[in-house]
Amino acid sequence: MVTTPTDPVSILRDLARLPTTSFHEEQALGYIRRSLEAHGIPYEVDPYGDILARYRRGEADQPLALVAHTDHPGFEVTEAAGDGCRARLLGGVFPEYLHAGVPVRVFHQGQSVAGVLTGPSQTSGAGETFFDLRCEEPVAPGDWGVWEMDDFREDGDLLHLRAADDLAGCAVTLATLFELQRRETDGDVYLVFTRAEEVGLLGALLVAQQGLLPPNTLVVSVESSRTLPGAEIGGGPVIRVGDVRRTFHPEAEAYLQAGWEALRLSDPGAKVQRQLLSGGTCEATAFGLYGYRTTGVALPLGNYHNMGPGSRLAPECIHRRDLAGAVALLTHTVSATRSGMVDPLRGRYEQTLERHRQRLKTSAQG
Image 1: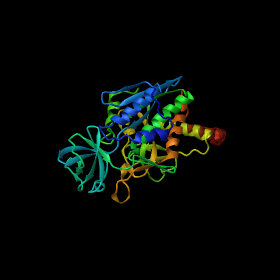
Image 2: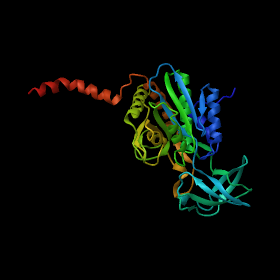
Image 3: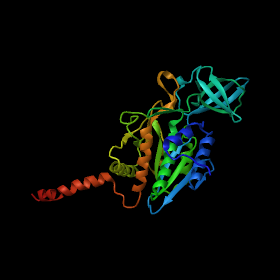
């Protein structure tokens, strides 16, 4: 039997060793399928390669979906001649980071080929970014690549890796599933692993467009997002109330808030942040466009899309505690999706109301 780890750091370490970019997520998707099979979780693959798994146990009237994407910015070869080639950027990296001397790794017929950028990038009239490479061995159009840097490195509580966005979200989603199994938690949870998010939320849009989730599903985008004031590395996972495009649904967020309340009762020292993360667009927006109630959980991220200080590409960075905290928050949130859940904010205000109801009534009569 294939065995796979169940804690988020070990899962992320495994995933981080698997290179990925938009349209070339096969290795990450393969790992996810093997993990689901090892734990007996049924899943389907849609016509576009997105994976939809389902955990269902006991009574749960409210389905919840955890959505993470399997790609990360990289590039694809468009032209090749001798040891030179031209490549198209896949994903959001600012042009000033793509300059001569940047080392890369190109994948040609299953083999890794070292390469280096030979000049600055250029942006086409259609808004696409291209750059030139020199490779140690011949490559061909259709080959693809990633930035050459550490796959995964631990520095105390900080985790440095090429693709925290969004392999960390995939690790959190899988680890949450395994924790639900371990606890034998009642719930109805879909796990959605999408493709090609970095080039326009493509996988998420297709899952939503096909109606593969029930219309009443609460959709939670699980990913890493750049740090902002109120969303700091090490401060805990972030309840994401919106992104640069949209604010999300208060009813969906209420379940995360209920999960947060339950988490604080079981672990008073647990940290959770709440913020509108306007640094980018996430998959909650894609599902919201098709009528789903959406919210998000994000891990504060340093060196977003590998854009480090001084216009130099660098590994992304997240905190071990934020990773584990996201699993704990989502695990407790699943319990809140049982019927009868009351928004904890409403509950607090109603307690205050009851303390003052009679005084208001009496004072209203003069």
